[in-house]
Amino acid sequence: MEELIPHITWRMFKARLRGEGNDYKNFRWIKLPQFNSLKKLYEYLSKINYADIYYSKEWYLSPSESEDKLFYIQSDFVIDLDEKDGIMMKRIIDFVNKEINDPPRYILSTSKGFQAVWNPEVKDIPNDLINKEKEKYINNKRLELVNKMKKAGLVFDYDVTVNKSVIRLPNTFHRNGTFCKLIDYNHLNSGGR
Image 1 (cartoon, rainbow, N blue to C red):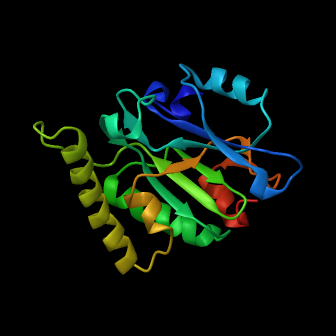
Image 2 (tube, rainbow, N blue to C red):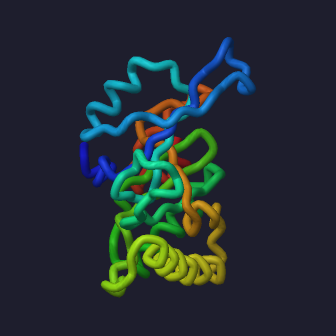
Image 3 (cartoon, rainbow, N blue to C red):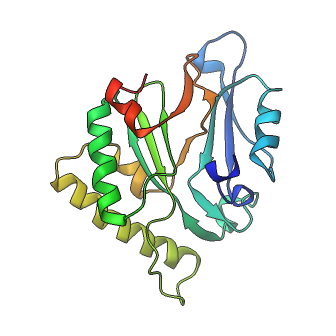
């Protein structure tokens, strides 16, 4: 289970909590405490009335620090497709696999589309780069890959891939009640439902 989200202690987790009733305007965001295992995180989530759960694709030395004190370590490679187009997602996965020679760590069926998450694809990072310089270097390399993907006609949410972002935690519910579940590559043929 821990391979699903490696380096869990280096991640930030956020929850959108339900307010009174189901009015989306009454929901509020909170930063979750740190967990040393995915099992403990899921146990915690079973006790709160959450609407959405997200985690940072970025890894930080001390993720509980304030935003201005975060020390960047690395980042997962994430593709977010905001429509249920299994054929497009397969094309994206095939393209990325060919470019980085690594299959995704997992594929997630969300309420509106899919997410595919890979281990970090940028491996040739100069040793003298740290923190913000390292983050900029990785994002620039990632942008090169995204531009190749655009030229190949692949459509997805480019900002999630290149910029700092949080992504949906697998095996949790979306605020509309959809269970966001892990699927395998072949399941994309059926639209991933």
